[in-house]
Image 1 (cartoon, one colour):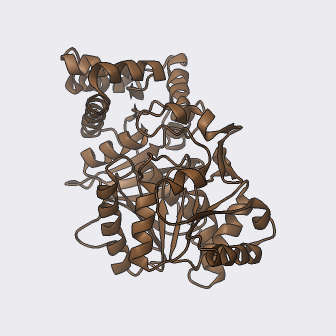
Image 2 (cartoon, helix red, strand yellow):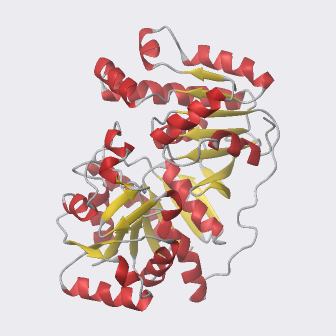
Image 3 (cartoon, helix red, strand yellow):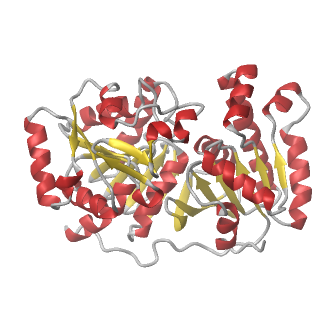
Length: 425
């Protein structure tokens, strides 16, 4: 193994794995830390569900993943978080970074959530989502990790006792040698974590080349795009032309959406406007017993005879806030997550073999409900979202999952994903 990745949620794991496969690395994603050891591959991504848990729990899970990757011989470790730097005032990006650095004996690393292909850029330490500062984007309304500050140096410094500095875009413009020189100066000044600007893929490639020798990289998925070429130049591996090849599957298909991001709201609305079949999961109705996963599943399985069906709990920010006020943030989230996971499991048991899931928390819950342990990474549907494939536990059946971060994809993403998987709409 060359690269070992620790991802703080499931969609983030598929996102970074997609970037590696795109550059020719044979990549396997595993759900959680397996007791029986890790598979053989150029890169292994361990998907955790640690983004929104308590910092101490996130650190413990991340260190367990690190131990497994080290035991498998990983040359470099990559801590992957969201391209919108999703975190709270207390973590978990800072605490996990601190713990990994200490365990690896590392005195310096970078932090770079940039993913320009999806509109996430960092300029002078400030994160932009499209043309808006992070603090002016839809992320300011996120129900679990509202992001109200675009200054990543300030955000990260609040989460760590280590000095945080800035690696500027104009340094990266001059190439890897200039980046290495700047990193050396930052180290001499006592900086331990450098927030790195990135406005383009060229900046990501420069960062990857400059950081390929670090014990630890912390970033979104963007920096991973440049690591395989950097490894290849060092003679560590030869890119594989068929790294993204998956089987062609038949049978019913469905979409399960729990994300309430603005992008996913628009995608759900687009599906509905096209007149396609959709069933809404209502957290208040679940709580009051007026709706259950079983009743929704019964409706969905009947509808599958006529084509793909969307099951969604996606709602506007105002609706989410009203539900949270009525039920409490954690109960509302738990009700929806558990219901969608149960429905997704029932859909697969009913024969669905191509399943699109929208939302990081929802994707994690669905993967766990299905008992999926490993995913082979296929071709991207859009930047950061690939189709994946897994053998279903307890059977020889294979299913394909597209696990989408809430913020990713265009208006027609659901239909685009299904068409790419060979589904007729």
